[in-house]
Image (cartoon, rainbow, N blue to C red):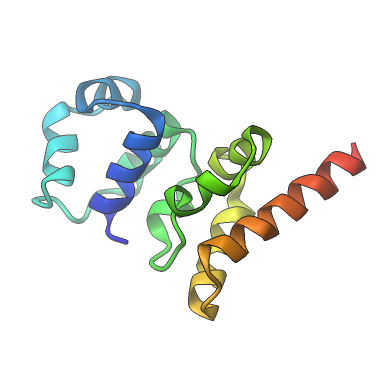
Length: 125
């Protein structure tokens, strides 16, 4: 997925419009628009961090090239499991989704892995 695709997907999931994301991230709406229109394909790490914080997802999601996006698996998950996937503190999730994509693991299989991880976390608390 491209930066544009990843950003569009997360904005849809979070229900954010360009102006709201720009304000939350502390960046210009024109920059958000340029990214979403594919006119801007490279942005600074600082900008990615601001966008990540605004979307509550780890910055690695935007940096990793091959990932299974959250939109592909959220429909299979409970609210607790969705929070795990969409939490910016879930850096291991980003790495796992990247590895899964490279290994040919499907979104449905990955959602089953997430369910197992969340269940194990729940029993450890």
